Image (cartoon, rainbow, N blue to C red; front, top):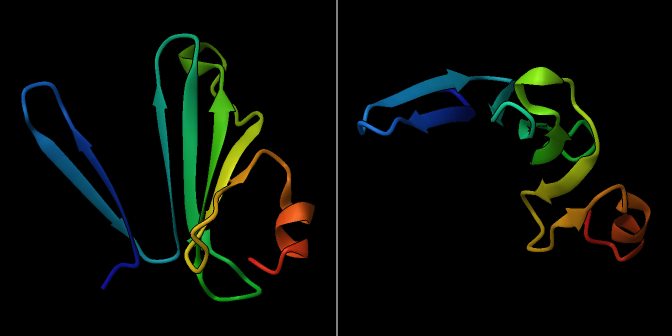
Length: 92
């Protein structure tokens, strides 16, 4: 069974699902702005982690600024590159 899933739904209601075992990445974008969501297994804890990055959309699709990190075992998101504060609180 796959650990990660990527689902999209079009305007006409059509749905597309893709399943991945180790990680998954999706780029949702317009021409000039977008986000990349990366879901993977954290090497240290073995738990799921999702990171969301800003992109320049279709015109500049490479990953840019880290916007938020979501950890499976914590209710608190980490915004930006503020991982040091997050781990200092013992949430990671």
